[in-house]
Length: 274
Length: 259
Image 1 (cartoon, rainbow over the protein chains, first blue to last red):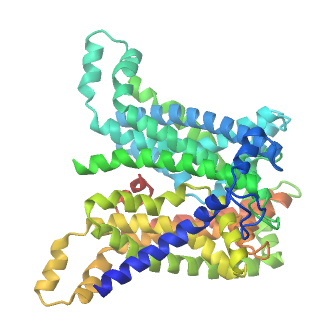
Image 2: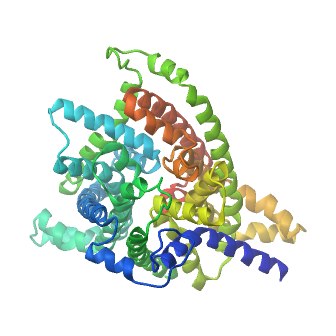
Image 3: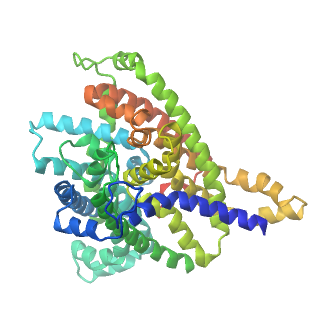
């Protein structure tokens, strides 16, 4: 009995440590004080300011949000296409050596230290800029750079989510489609892709989340391009690290990400049951 | 044949944006920035001259080791508890411990800093270690949980049948059998925690630097030196990967098992 209470207390304390800062932020998103300490009455003004664009950080927030969503969408799209094709190809390859090389390279971005990945990518972008005489600095070029950079660590997750689906699916249906006169490409879209769709969707959501979360690779590789992460970083030295409208913005983002994660974790629970 | 050819775009992409960058790190680490010539030692000599580096390495060792130890001490009981939870609660509990991983780490650090400001906790090494533990705890829990889950209960029952007390059975059976999880958890916490950049800066009010912050600061003056120190880090990472692979042939205990 005593042991049970001790265990529960310990688990409770760790959960408090994990959630206290976030909950504190959510609670204080409903009050307008700049600091975290004194409550100045309940109000929705932070949220109203956010949507009407009146808050003290309104311009910055709008720019950062648009940039982040734009990059996130294309990273998610590119990663999903590349990762899914990669998974289908890898699944069809029988040579053990090719398979090993493929999956090892796939692991590198996931286990490599982020700052090393970031520096390595900076070197490659410098090289390309010199080779193709690209005068890098425009918004479009910067966004492209960021999309390519983030895809390197998002696509591997898509591949890893699609591969198990392929291993479970039956290749005979694809072959039957070919026998019945489908072209390989048509059979791919009519048979294989629908079969592995759940894995593709999870991969796409995951890469979107990873992309909007990324800070290190963004900060090292692009300057003068604000995303939500770099916007937060820019506020770090202020007297109040999280001003009122920023709290409201990130409360909304927190709930979106939380909902996404619940969707991602639920199907897994069902699988375990079977 | 058609299906196999689908592997090509991804392979090309990874060759250009994953392998080529790493090759460039290797090359730039051995190129003298002043005249562009190949030189085995210049960048490393320059690194040794950096006065801040000694302190950075010292701080990184203290922060990295304390964070790993704390994550293990906190993460092991939690992983153990999670394996014992009844099925209907399990998904929720695992979700609760993993969900913070998906909230922007800068946001969590800034919120922690704001809370620390309110309760008057001093920013410094203690706050840095707290921040790093906060960020990396889920990375310790997951491999531990995956390994503990796979341990066959027969061994523990056998030990208690042969007269071992539950505590003795835990230390003699469960802990040794969970070694692969411990090693893989440590590899996922130790090097990533000291190479994370920004956590230290936020949690120490810019007074402290760990390796990650140091590399970032080098990037502005010399990419070659940043490459040189990245190269050293790569060696350490390979070493820790080889060690952790030796302990476990099961790649599921690593990132793959997270989802």
